[in-house]
Image (cartoon, rainbow, N blue to C red; front, top):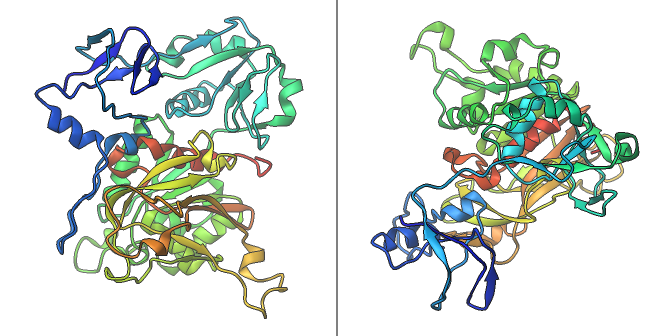
Length: 439
């Protein structure tokens, strides 16, 4: 595909674009391929569902793309390669403190390097945009690095291959402290069943790519208990509750690989969260705490037939609470790639339970982090049946459970490691495990 880049500002369809804008002209040999990747897809109705009904890369990757319908003039050059954006320091290069605006996935590659180099930093978690001394508005979830000299001592290695920008600030840590929340390095475990699981592999690939420190956790370690002594965050990849509990059947493999976590493993996970751990559940695995932790959440799609609800491989619009730690750095409206995924509902107590302090709703308060749009829901692809069933329903939830949290990611935020636009939900959920509840 031929890709051009604007050398100066230009106007197209009465909209002004800045220098550096990428342009994909459709007058090129691979025009059809460009249209296939970039245009929203509206597949025809029919009895046989496609594997992926809407595979529109800009939506999945959080990239703004605009279709231009009229001819326009622009001084642009064709690119032989696409250079990776480079990070660096903006403003005062000798500042005592630096701020990194929330938004880029690369922030987490930098965060993990700072954890490794023991560079202390905080997250701005004031619940609203924070203003620096110079009047710049910094969104919630941004990073505040108070030891500017220590950061500079490890440059440029810490920014090698990272696009994040450090903004020098005159704000001192003592004056900014009320808006900040320190974040220790999370001790992370990823559940690895003995039966190969596709989403576990993609999750592992993603954690490696963004330089997270983590361990693979097998059934025996969960059954041994005392998980909180070793982990702050445990991730369950997308898999059925039955697969997690029962695992491999006897006589299908060697005895050491037989079985799952069983009921004892469920108790071990409950104790882990009660003691302050964070359990992150991706897509199907969200049903495990819903079914076995007595939380006030219902999966409204569980048990539905294809006639009642069916959506396979489409981009759906979701509304994100960007002031919630799991939503930090996200766009308020973004796209979720939905492939036979989940939708939730908070279960309200009946009249008898309404004033009961021991009701699940009061014991385990649930917060909506993101919900499916109630109108204009489908961005690319289609929902073949039951669209009204999930319109306006929660897609991502944070349930307080004892001293810890259960994060339900209702769709595969990391599907095939291509949904760059929703990676931060997983990264934020991991980081949330060491973030105090003030943020």
